[in-house]
Image (cartoon, rainbow over all chains, first blue to last red; front, side, top):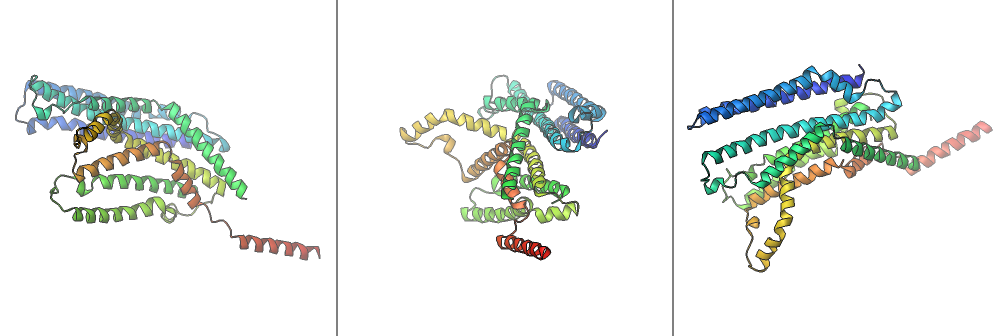
Amino acid sequence: MNNMQAFAKTILAAIGIFFAIQIIAQMLIPITWPFTTSEFSAKSLCFIIVWLAVSGLCLVVVCYIFLYKREELAHRIVGKQQPAEPQSQIQWLPAAFRLVCIFAGLYCLFYTFATGSRILHRLYIYLSYQGRVPEHLARLVTAEHIITWALTLAAGVYLLCGAPHFVRWQVRKTLKQCKAFEKSDNSSR
Amino acid sequence: MTKMQIFAKTVFTVLGIYAVVTLYRFYPGRYAYRPDETPIFQELVLLSAFTVVVGFIVYFTVLNNTRLSSKLAGPGPLLESATQAAWLAKSLRVGLVFIGLMLLPNSMPVIVKTLKLFFLIRTTVNDIVIWKSIPRILERSYREWFNVLYDFLKALLALYLICGAPHFIRWQIRHSAPPAPHTEQIESAHQCSTDLERSESE
C-alpha cells in the first residue's frame, strides 16, 4: 500500500463515520414524534417503521462501503502502482478531485434524504386532511420543491459516481493554469 | 514556502470561506425573533459591527494567511517558485472546489428560484407598467430582502468556487510569490559579478 492509498483509506473511513453519525441522528427524529404529537395513529407507526427500515438500510450500505470495503475503494480511486516522482504530481490531482466529488455526492444524497423526508412528511399531512387542505398548508409541497429535490438527487448521484467529466475538466483547467504560471515565471526570469 | 505551508494555507482559506458563509447564516438580523419595528439605524449598526468582525476573519484566514500557515506548518524544505506556484494552484483549486460543492445543495433552491424568475418577468413588468402596482414577489421587508441577498450571493459564490475560482487563485499566487529583487539590487549584483570576473582575469 502506497502513501496515497493509506491517505485515501483514512479519508474514506472518516467519510463513513461522518455519514453514519448523520444517518443515526436522522433515525432518531421520527422516534420522538409520538411524544410530540397528540394524534398518534397506526398510520404514523407504519411510517416510523418504514423510515427506520430505510435509514437502517442506508446505514448498513454506508458502513459496508466505507468501513468494510474501504481498502478496495481506495485501490480503485488511487490505483495499485506507486507512481514515480514526476508522475505523482500529475496523478494525485484527479484522485483528490475524485475524492472531493465522492464526499460532496454523499453530502448531496444526505441532503436529499433529509429534504425527501420533509416532503414525505408534508404529503402525509395532505393525506391526513383527505383532500380538504387548508389554505396555509396548500403551498407546502410545490413543483419547485420537487424539481429542487430531483436536481439535488441527480447531482448527488453524478458526484457519487466520481463525476468523470467534471474531474477531467477541472484537471485540464488546473494544469493549463499551472503551465501559464510556469511560462510567466520563465519569461520574468 | 514548504508543501505543508501550502496545505495549511489551503485549509485556512477553506475554513475562512466556510466561516463567512456560516456566520452570516446565523446573523441575528435575519431572524424573526427580533421585532419588525427595530429602527433601520440599529440594524445598520449591527450589520456594520458584524461585517467588521467577519472582515477580520476573512483578512487573517483568506487574504493574509501566509504568517498563520507558516506558524502552523513549521519549517521544512523550501520549494522553487515555479513548483510552489503549481502546488499552491492545485491544492487551492481542490480545496475551493470542495467548499463550492458543499455549498451546492443549499444553493439549489435559489438556483431553481432564479430560473423561475425568468418566467415571471412578463407578469412583473405588466403589474408595474400597466396596473401601476408593486408585484407580490417584490413586496418584502428589508429582513426578507437581506435573506434573499444572502441566499443569492451564497449561490453565486458556490458556482464560482465550483468553476475553480481562477481569479482568486491567480491573486493568491501573485501575493504568495517570493518578492522579486529590486532593479537596483539586480544591477549592483551584476556589477559585483563583472568586477569579480575582471579581478580574476587580472
